[in-house]
Length: 108
Image (cartoon, rainbow, N blue to C red; front, side):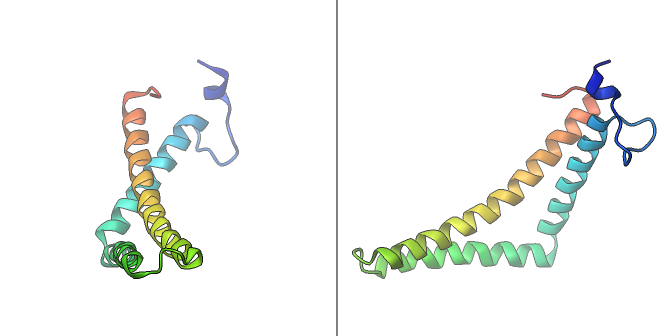
């Protein structure tokens, strides 16, 4: 067994390695992200982000292309919405991956 698997932190439950505890925590966060997205609040917040992206895209069609400040503002609104969606998807994917790794006992 590797040294990392033998190391313990004070908050790690007895009989659980630090790596296993981290996988469990990551899987739990992923599950919470899924529950959030499945909730009315999650769907609403995600819808607001998607609507913000679409509104900014439509506004880009109307804004003066020489108005760098306005273009940058709209680009930032689009980027923020995409990042928000990306963070949630990343949490879901990392949680699912952690669960698979935990189930199989090896890290990919």
